[in-house]
View (cartoon, rainbow, N blue to C red):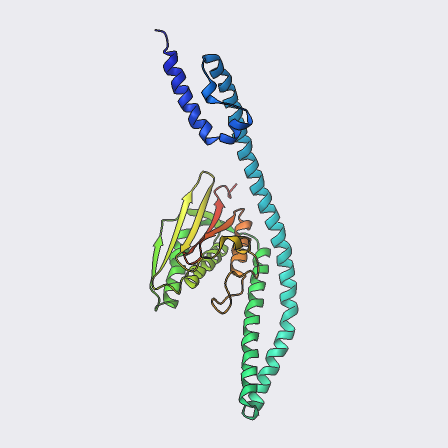
Length: 304
């Protein structure tokens, strides 16, 4: 029985039209116009070009992987230098800060009753600033030490980590109305202590930036991809403008004022540092007053 060439050609053209829609720019590059195809010879020529397009698609995918790897290398080197700087600066700051704190304490203990009210207020302000500076130094040291630590990996149940952190947060926020939506999470080969810090920082941020909502909704999810897991933490809080997204994981970078939301601006930088040590990536999405979603990826082949 002779094949139905008209039907075969029609089916092939339908398939190629779909392919053309998906790879419009590449069809333009090879000057392919499906409407001009009329016979099997032209279909054969197009099939050859289709093969070229498939190879181009593979080349593009390979290039994307190379760019991702290069991004990881650049971030890792930048964070390594920043960690060394942070360690040096934080140690250099400790001594003068102790002197300031010590002398303020002496003044308050010995001369408090002799000081006018305005002077007491000034000293109280200095004490508050010293405490804030001390917290900043401690966070800097943690950032630096985390970068210097070796990664001790084992199979870690992410559900167990989340349960522990959420229970802590619930205990500290009994007055808050928070709805937790937590998807089942996988077993991941990673450093348990470091991953605990990642989740703690992300969930603390979600709670903090949604505190102005009558009911906060925090979602924890994961997408299982062929070579990696992509985890996400979503909240319905204040969000941020995406034009500032490049500052999101920078050290000392804050997208909201200190008067609105406390913090040192180191938490997400620490998250990125830890995820990079696990050969993953971090990124975020948000809209002002409509919440934010922070993502991080972890490769599945870390045991190799």
